[in-house]
Length: 478
Image (cartoon, rainbow, N blue to C red; front, side, top):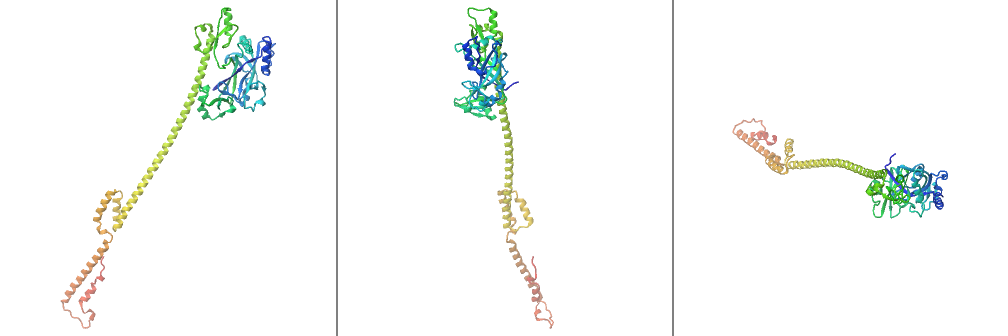
């Protein structure tokens, strides 16, 4: 099973010392670890060394910038049982097993029940108990017992560091120096976590958002305890190998080699002085001669593991940032396409509005021009049609010239011109009729006409007769 993230928590190991070792240390250790020690018959099973330790402090941030709350602690603490105890998280070097799990009061180690901790917001311990297999590494067992002796150079030198596998986390932001999550603000929004996670120590950040605010990782979801690694206090995550600097009185070479192979990182055995190698850079000609091939191999393996984990974290961060950037770019492109469509629609609407406006203006101008002709001339339908065709698309300057030209050709159609001509034609017609009558009368007067005696006096004159016949009122002048 693989997890996206792994975090470690550490505490000082507390062994149950046998009276053969030191009866005073035995009483002291029994008082410290009490009910957390597994129920093991150590007189019968002399190859077992019972131990107990506070694996983690719940609701309080550890030195790696990680934290678990009561919900996660209650859901996962029993899963530590039967998990291995190894050296420096090297799963190929298992030296014991976890057998018990419980809770204790932060600071005093007083045992606590599930009911007592389920609603706690403040810090308390997850406390574990197990056994170390002495036969697997006798020197390690001796050192663990020594670590309980306050007069020993190895006092509290061995600590327990446990690993936790998980895939999800929230952020806790705390202002000031507090380490308790009850004093902070929890962030669960995915976008905010993505923005702030680069500040986490585990991802290479400073652990700070600004000068007054710290940011931590809170483990959530499906959490799986992966086991316990024994390491040297106080650096829970220190990795390295140790070599022996042989003093003047050397033991046989075979015995030295046997002990070297059983040494834990940074330990001190008997009277041999250990030289610590925590990095490939620490290797020199002198300590290289004293180290075994397997120890150098372990160191390189650890260095590669650290580099690989760092690379995996950095790769995941870069991939996440690339994904976020691509999503932002896709959103911008989509928004740009939508905006372009909206702009095109607006341009088309504006163009249509402008064309409609020009049509209205052209119509108004045409109507004004036709009204000007109608107000000045009497136009028939045929004339109006010709004028309309001519002036419909005409520029203002061209229309002015056209209007002046048409004034010459359309004199006869000017308003009032037709009535004046009709009156003049009427006068001329009357004058013509009168002249005809007079001419006829003159000719008639020169002839002698016998008028019967019976003729009426009203018809005594031809002049009067023709005058009446050709009087103007008897004609219709069109």
